[in-house]
Every structure is written in structure tokens, then in C-alpha cells.
Length: 284
Image 1 (cartoon, rainbow, N blue to C red):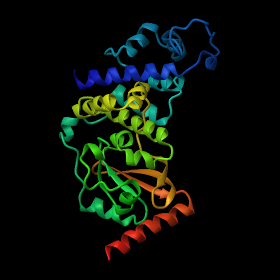
Image 2: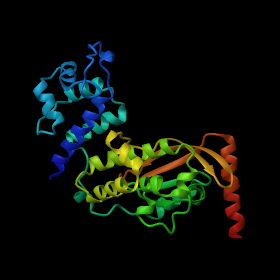
Image 3: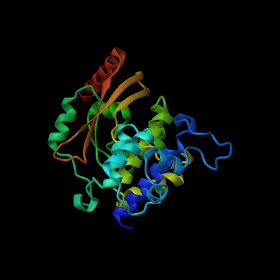
Image 4: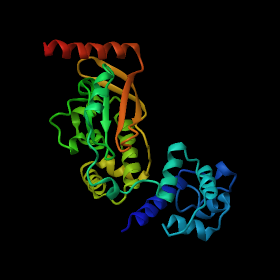
């Protein structure tokens, strides 16, 4: 299956899951008592967007048809997509992402400059994540907060695999289901975009086999493009930590993203200082 065809199939599934979230009463449509599936019907979406029923049906079937920017913007409005979902839809419809064979089979590796930036962030836990959502570099604060990555395999450093399969990490997450669902949304966005990269297919298959929660949530097709958002950690040494994650893209290597976690509470900043002070004492 070609990359373009896979993008069309991912777009089709994405549109169907978003249509299923809507309700007729949101658009003053009659709520028929016997609907075979949740959400709006295809013909209702077509009517609201202002396109033919056959055309929209073909779009949801992954056929090779062209959608203008005007239609895509209107469709995003009717489906009530947020900004990240809108961007994702355009990527799938337009193919605005480099193909894996253009980037090489392996993800780019961090260099000394990346590590220097991570180290310079001091008490703030910071990670460097590649396009496969593997942690490829980190600072000491991240190792203290999220667990040491040094002896983990590539699979064990994957943020999605870790969320579901690393029991120690899972125990530290205060709101595990929220964090796990967010990790699925990151993975869905990446695997949709890099549709021809077998690495993603293998990871998804392994997670579906290993985790009943992943198997249940994956079909929802939620997406997130960045790791921004709050993180709550129950640390075994210092207790509750409240952190804000912010994603920074490395311009010369856009496949690498730096995720910096800053304290949301003064108490958290103090506890991070205590953790790092303990590391400093052990190093002496």
C-alpha cells in the first residue's frame, strides 16, 4: 500500500470518528429514534458542509478525490475540530509531511549541543523525543522524576510503551488514564503521518496485544501533535509534583522535540531542588 493511499485511509477513519462525536441537536437536525450508529449521518455532514453526498461518502471511503482548502476549512468547522485536529486533517489530506525514506530509516541522533541545553535547564526535567516518541536524551532532573533511562532499550524508552507497560512509571502517574490516553493521541498522530513506516505498525500491534486498555482506546483515533499539558507525578521520595510540559521543536532537526517540564506550584519547585541536591550529595 502506498504512502498516499495510507494517508487517505487514515483520513477516512479520522473523519468517521469525528462525525461520531457529534449530535443532531447541535445543528437543529431531527433526532431520529433509530440511528444505526452514533453521531451524524454522512448525508447530514455533506449537507452541512455544502458538498454532494456521494463526494463526502467517497472521502470517508478513502477514495482518490481532491478537497479544496475551502471545503476542508468548512469540514473542520462542522466537525468542531480543535487546532491540532485541524492541522492533522490538512496533513492527511495534503500529505504535508516528509516521507520516512526522505529522512532515513533511523531517527536523527542528539548531539552535544542538545545535551548541553538539557543540562542547562537545571532543576526542570527535560527530555529530547524523536519522531517515534522515543526518549533519546534527557537531563538528570528528568531521570530523577521519570526514572533513569540509561539501561532501558529503545522500546522501553518509547513514551507510549512506557505509559502502558512500565509498571513503575505507571505507578508514578497520578492520573494514569489521562496520561495514557494522551500518549495514544501522540502515537496516532505520528503513525498517521508516517504511514509507511513499519516501526509504528509493529509498535501498535504489540501494544494491542499486550494492553487491553490500549486495545480499547486506540480505535477512538484521538490525536495530539505536541506534548504540551500538565503532568502530575506521585514521586516515591518527595511526593506530589505538578509540572507543565512544553514542547520545543529543534528547527534544523524538526523530527526532534524537546519537552521541558516547569513547576506549576512553588512546592514542586522546592521538591525538584531537593531531588537534585540529593544527587549532588551522592556525587561527592
